Amino acid sequence: MGNIVPDAIERYLAGLNRLADPVLQDIEREGRAARLPIIDAEVGGLLRVLVTAIGARRILEIGTAIGYSGIWLAGALPPGGTLMTMELDPDRAAMARQNFARAGVADRANIMIGDAGLLVAKVSGPFDLIFQDGAKALYGKLLDRLVGLLRPGGLLVTDNVLWSGEVVPGFVSQPSHDVADTRAIADYNERLAADARLRTTVLPLRDGVSVSVKVK
Image 1: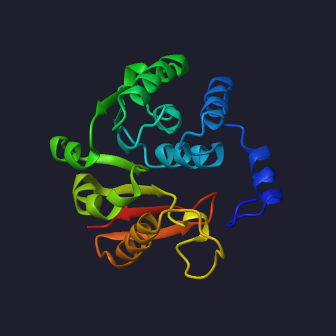
Image 2: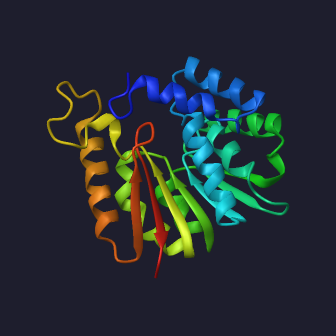
Image 3: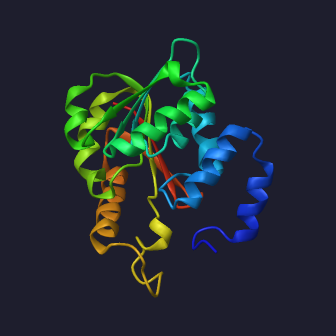
């Protein structure tokens, strides 16, 4: 059972999600079986809605993994739209390329292999939407650069910001996450809330998703 949303509610929401297709479902099953860090379909549905709502054409993703979240993002892009996604692990990047091809989005998804902390200095904006789901220790370190890469009105979406509830001191009696990662996410949340360039809300969906719009 999740610490944020009860199982019964999560099953109800999953039953309402009609955006996933058989390829996405297969990739999700493969990722879960291999214990890989991927989002779930409810967060994927949120990403697809946000991409559609703002008419995004250029998306940056930090943390490709096996391409599951990238398929949700790229699948909402219009013709000519582009997803640029960064992955540290070459093996996972290779799997992501295969999955992009399986899902029919290979023509709009480009993978950069390497440390996102270095790669973000090599890309140029503006991006309409940035999805932050890489190493948690990098969340705060990348914030200024990512905001700089966003267009005004663009969205910075970040996964795992509630971290199974462990960002709330004392809420979890036996924490399972690395203390440094938990501290990094808690600090990042505080920075988002205080950043005058952004308007941020946190959705208690799955492991917590923050949505920040760039206002200046």
